Length: 451
Image (cartoon, rainbow, N blue to C red; front, side, top):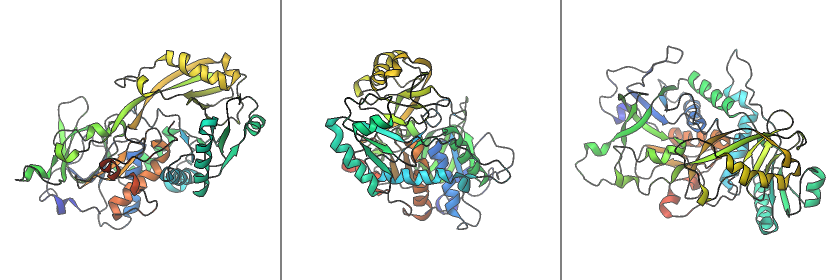
């Protein structure tokens, strides 16, 4: 449960710049204090901030002061807006299926949640094309078992034989396919920017404040302790470094949420955090992924799904007929340098295109239109999100490591973390297994549906 700063930081409530009410001219600097500092202004961070304000209701007399800190205000390198924009129910881990179902309902009713008075309805441009997973004979049994789990969770997924597959999608080569799973509802793709912007605008209207800057350091309770090896600590201040400046602003806080995406692991290596309390390290790192767009006038029609090939390559329609986008995750040995977002065009020519043309013969004559690269916040431990409280930093919560499915799980993950902060427990979905405990115990949760 959130306590006020006066409960946790004696003297912090007096003096300094006060909280800036929404609707006034934005302050280029962060405030002196906040109840909750959310580090990372991507879709997950803004979802956490939005749900914090929704769930607080009338619990607090003056309202919870929530600050979102984003170092890339133009979102030029943000995973959210550089993703392929998909949402699916077809995961192999129960919690991921449940989060997808919650998020699908949220998106279906987005105007009830995020609609603004006297403004046009939000249109996320959802295209209900469904996901189509293809499996070889070797992986057929595993796919069938996964579909049964998905059905048990209420997802509408059907299995297709090669004959049924060919009848439904005659443009496909099905020679090496043993079985396929096809999502019948709540699967497809949408515009990521629209969701991010809608969350940001609604949260801001509820009183959330944001600033441009980078959290590079912390001050914790160990700075005030005599013990050299305390069993735990609390974060007292975050240091927000101003853009293009050597200046930083200390922000007193009661709670910190690490929603820094691909840089969530690096954040826990920041100055001021006791190294002994940050073990094991958070195994989240940036992994660069390419997305390519192409045109093929004789390719699959508008009923084409978001197809995941047996080879790992994927594609989906992209706007007008004959346009597509797709990509493929590299092997561990082929991981590209994540230090920039340059695109290796040979990767499409040599690795992706042959696989696409094998599956869709019409793609033999495609013409590449463009490309970009974005980051997965890749959890090297088990490719699943890490949610909930840190075991030794008492007021730090995690919401990162989704390894490519953060966009689609953001509404659910944001609510889950907000429930822990405001109510002290999960209420909507039980996501305890996605907590830090599995990292400490060395027990990964296997998810076979990472694309």
